[in-house]
Structures are given as structure tokens and as C-alpha cells.
View 1 (cartoon, one colour):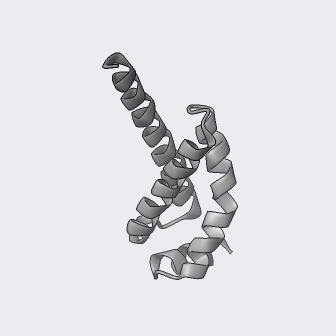
View 2 (cartoon, one colour):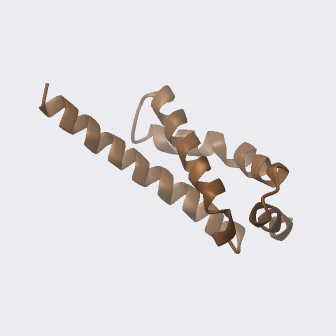
Length: 92
């Protein structure tokens, strides 16, 4: 199943993408909520991560690589968000 899913993603299959989205969206939101306790912000970040995931769909050869991309990208975007918020607070 995982191999078929990755092949579908690599070929641009929207059903395969939706399957990954449905599988990981809530988990990624919960993961990002640990960094940013704002549900709206975390959902926006995770949506941005999935846009990047779609744009890089040809790069994944295994479901673990896709999952690593999703979690690493989410963490990095959360850290950037926190850093940006600190800068904004500093200048207020």
C-alpha cells in the first residue's frame, strides 16, 4: 500500500495526496500545537507544509521520506513562526 501511495503522489494523483493529507493533517496539527498553542496558526502552517509537499512530490521514494519531510517542515515552520513572533513583540 505504501509503495502504491508514493507512486501515486509522484505521478500527481490527487487521491493519493488526499490520503496522505487525511492520514497526517491532524497529527501534524497536534505536533505543531506543542510549539504554537494557537489552533488557527498551526492549521495554516500545516496547510503550507502540504502545499510544499505537493510541490516536491517527485522527490519521495518511500513513505518514510514523505513523513520525515512533513514533520521536519512542520517543525521548521513552527520555529520560524515563533522566532517571527518574538521579533514582533520586541518591536512593539
